[in-house]
Length: 615
Image 1: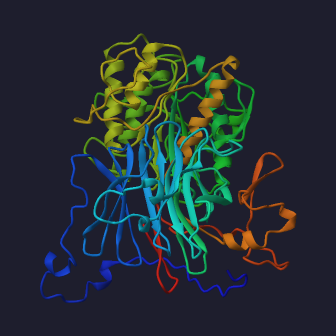
Image 2 (image 1 turned 60 degrees about the vertical axis):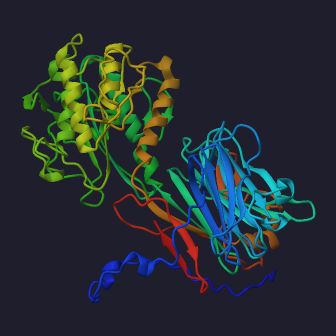
């Protein structure tokens, strides 16, 4: 391969809008027979559950298929360009227990077939297989000698603690495979087990029928946030282009109605620490705060902490800025959403004096323990009806009977987080009003598509059971906080609300539980709306001209750990001023810019070097 190449790849995103052709007059509606090139062919003829098929064509026009059969074993089939079977259904995963998911396939310049897939039978592992169909007699039966037909057999690409999924594969001009996948494991454990994008490159050794690691498993997205569903393509100059969906640039809004009875003072202090940073009252450990931490990853958290009944138990320390932002204890719900004006991203701590129960507005004032301080069920109903009311009006048009409503940001993921140590309606022993308030809140949140994530600040089974009913669905398991609810979704009441219930530690003896809670809050905050991102690698420039100062040798990952606690990517031009090469030549580049969920991108490169993306 030439070490100095003319780089002529043009990266561009083509979005084909049918509206462009709205002015063209078409006299007759096209019929299916006028546009279908061939009749449909049934590829498999059996009673199995054949799913997740991937397809590729070779230089002779033959078609190669790979799929998961019963989500257990991986199967392969080859048809010629007339749809006739050359190699029939052939199991290519090794004997034994497997759970084959999400295969991908690529054909190289010698018409050999490269396959990557994930085995979910245990801790998820990414596997790679190389097939040579020319080694089979292609008489229409299954492959005769799998040991010859399979050049590289189920080579392990990635296997660690946590899980991994969605592998994708492409092959370069030298027939070497490049693989990407999402992985919840990263060496330093910095990203709360959120999936990141990894890349590796193999070189095929034909003499030994092996795949040798050229560039080891490389973290290419070393920053907090969810990165999922990667795809990969390689251009004529062997630049590797990778796309994925990413929560960077996303927005989430959290409404937090908090019990204001005297037993909740430490919980108030710790909620401020979760959002704004500081040391936890209940555990003493330091946390940088969701808002400042996610700001570095270009993610926005809108939050409003509502004091049920209006009393502000904590106004100093880590809560001081929130107390000020909410009007120093004098203001209730805002009249405009957060985020409409740049920089307006915090509702702070605010009074909540009007809530919803039995279809009516209820006025409350702090009473130190009771309806006026602990009504987290009716408070949750109010928050969800503020986005979609009982008349079906949405957003700023929603108008429940309360004098003031919460105005949600229209473009953010919506989450409500009630926090309490007492039963849902008025803090007394569980009674029918508690059950009714939970059912009302659950239904309102399901219809409003607001995810409830209640925090359980006690050991009371009835409180925990109510919170689980809100987060999932009410099923009559009163007083049972541990059993998952079965939510078939046949009615609004039986529909899973999309949330989760978590324990909120209230003493220093549960510092470990506080860390668990922080982990969950980070996951909630970062798993929001998605954008499409892209990066471009030049693996051969790194292989041929690594910088001596980097210490990189063939087989190493392209991203290294520095100072024991951070990652350093090899970012730079294909050839820098000193003549050395680098792996990442175009770092994470945002392709989409919209308040929406952009998911599952797919990438391809045409013969002119243009890049095409669909999502």
